[in-house]
Image (cartoon, rainbow, N blue to C red; front, side, top):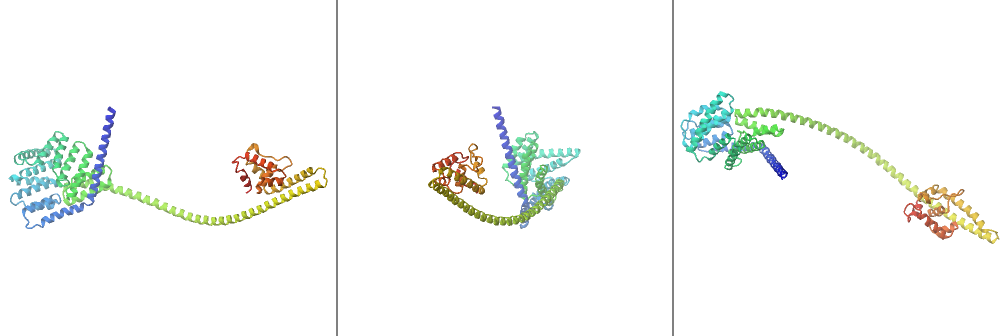
Length: 511
């Protein structure tokens, strides 16, 4: 039971891990594609600004909107538009100072922001919460960036002071400002290290935020920082990537996410992505013209650029080596092809010669076959005449009153067999050995002393010559047909191979 639980838990963890990897990979591919066309998003942002600047009459409300469009796009232009409104009436004057304070936080000019705070002593009730929040963020950003202990303590006191004021004014003036109340709850949860509660509240804020908008980019970044504090690194990278995608799509140049994503890619060894994302971040930093952003991105971008150049140099060297090896291989292949073509031409010529020789050989074989047939026909004819001659002599001897005509015939037949054996073996010198090779060892034939062939060998010699009729063989050798048939059956039964093909194989001897 315990083993099953452990196995199911491991499988669940593996599936969740694979799902997380798939989500991050998909988001990285989306960011790749969006960065490639980021110039078009910046152009669309600039077009929105140009449209506002062309509005007539150019009211103070329109001027505030232009300044706000510039605020996360070009800090210099945003500052100029805000400065043009600091002498205006309320609420535009407070909005202008609030924009300048927020801009000071973004570009790292905290001292300039501090000098602006005293200029706003009274604010309209509708802007008081926003103004206190802007000043609180200014001190909070300065506190986070400061490295001097004594000055940090002073900054922390101001952070706490403005945070208390923010909570008081929010409860008094803006109880409907749900997002501010939720952020306050997030801070409280983080202070108590209750990160799961902080993430739940962040979920609530994101559910009220339009996806891929600028506020979504800010909340996604905040969520990434919560994951960093809770030690969930992969989730942190995932939400940094979401924030970067939202920044790209909004045409925002004040990016905090893209260079962090570039840093993660660099540390994980993905140099190509790291280079493209850092290059994108440096381009935006130069457009936004914020010293803090440029300082953040330049050092990392310089390191990534150096590593990427080294990587590309090594890749180039490997490419050159590979191309050189390929060129050598192609040269060797070309030489091989030339040799092959030359060899093929020689083979073709040899094949032509061989074909001519084979044709000549076929003609010679045909002539030899015809000559053999003629010889065999002459031998057969000779045997017939010789056999008939013996029979005639025997008949004449019997009529002449020869005392023993059978003995006379036997003497003549011995001469006939001897002549036949000599004549046949002069044509087929290895016939006895070849014939015995077709028989089982115990059935092989050995002629008697003084003889060259046995009766069985003579029978199958005639079969080799094309005389297959037992009656004809009996007539030539002066045996009965029945005797010839018995010898033929005996040899077939002693065959090594198929019995029925024995005589055919005998006829192939010498051919």
